[in-house]
Amino acid sequence: MEGNVRFCQTMSDHGFVTAAISYRLGLKGEKNIGPLNVKPLKNAIRMAVEDLYSATVFLAQNSLKYSIDPGKIILCGSSAGAVTVLQADYELANANAIASVLPGGFRYAGVIAFAGAILSFEGKPDYRKQTPAPTMFFHGTDDKVVFYNKMQLFNKGLFGTNALVKRFEKFNYPYYVYRYRDMGHEIAEVPMTRNVMEILAFINDYVMEKRPLRTDITIKDGELKPYMNIKSHKDLY
Picture: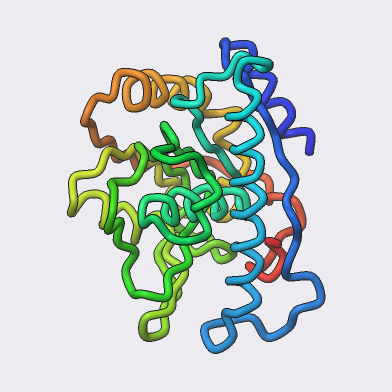
């Protein structure tokens, strides 16, 4: 996608080694996905996280070749990719079996999510074993594709930025959140051009300098273009 390529080039221009991955799609042909049928979504997210972990292992094993510091790998994703990076750090922090392919003691240095969420089957997401990586959230408050708040039925739920930030705030985890008031899923793309300086500041202050900061910004923007052809969470994976 052109927008992702431009963003990767921008980050490269600022001195970062960037890598973009592909992942398997698990929702093609699935129907009636919702609170009563989350298994297809669970499988799709699991597949994407597995592929992200495989890419992480490859980069760590080839760190000298690509001039990468394995201790400073930052995840970044948009829409389904944002769900994937948040879920990947969540599974790793909880030492779940899916993360066992990663090197012992490995942690991501930071996470940047453009309109993402976490799928939990245990109620509100808890980071039980380790704290999450410093995380930067962007989300439109009217997002109907990846919910800004949450979609929950009993202990099963997809928890978006608003719900996650409440958890981060409660437990004093480092986060930086940009809330676009009255905006929708277009925020899965917009920050890659409009918020580059804020992203660079987050990487410097929260990731590199490890300052225990929390930043919460709500803005009202003008009319923005819709994000691709995604109209439902069924279109994500």
